Image (cartoon, rainbow over all chains, first blue to last red; front, side, top):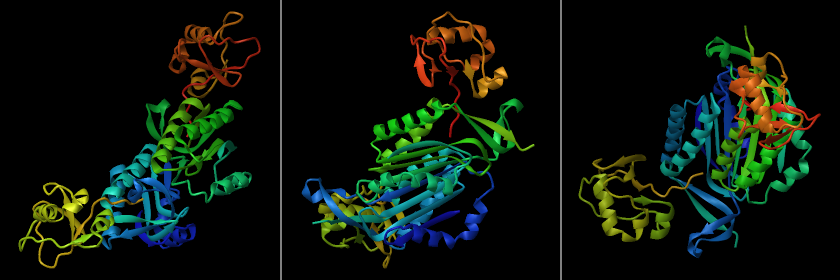
Length: 147
Length: 147
Length: 80
Length: 80
């Protein structure tokens, strides 16, 4: 299964469950075939302390990040990246979700979950995906300062 | 929070929830302080195909793996490893669970979940933990063949 | 051309105008950006190897840009 | 001495006997294992740098082993 989606607002367990329910057939076909040896799940969370480039990169307190996406290119590139990483690392499945719009401190803005035959592929795939996300997928973040 | 436990049988969501409930205070103190930027969760799953060293390393079908632990050293070393990896990578929390005894194909025998300020530390910590687990924690696996 | 992120902050706008020939290549547009918008240099890739988004897909070098194409500067992306 | 995993499979037992002096070091026990149990060589670390579990903690080199200590060969571990 290759699933990549840009979703408005923070990524909550409810939202993720609802999204995955829409792909129940693909999920079913994955379970129990005995070929998956490792799963790895990464969550990116908005931290309170962020450097402010307008204040000599001093750390300031954030309220939230606003994620700006260039649509529909961001969605297309996220999908293309997921498919490419899955093929390159021989993944059995990959799910990538990224927020659009406001995500407050402590909330999740990015979820990446992969299933692979062995642990090495799962670790390499997650590191590779995140590196390329930052190069290829047109998503920008804007700081919303606490004061 | 540093939590490392050897648990009898496969690691199920129910078992993990029950284990974590016993550490509710530590869990509470983690959430919402705004210092966690990344969480990473690894699950090791028993695969069907395994090499048989008695058959020239040919692949055979497994029914299960039997994990043998040297107790209480295995529990102690798992804890020591978790504490050491947490300190080395500046983790905010680490939970490591490993099975003892029989785990069938498709079931989970190992869970590692870390929370870190940034993604780089979370990835390095998981890779480091698994490498050192295989050197330092006295757990062995025995193949239970399907035929 | 559409610009985003730190580039748009530098330009205080989400788009800039750039004068080019009638049927420029990606390389020519990037070179024109360097010449006409020096304040955006920090976000501009080199014309020879850099890329632009043309109609929501990455394009480089000799790729031609036509009247009506949507052209965007996709650099300094910070996902995750 | 207790042995596990592939070593115990090779020895067809979960323990082996090894003759040593009354108060041997870890190094001496490992050297004696190499000499007295050549079939386990694949699982034995070198005496100079290798370690044994003595009373459930890793010990190396000059560490002394006393009467009644539980000594185990912890190598070729395959967790995860």
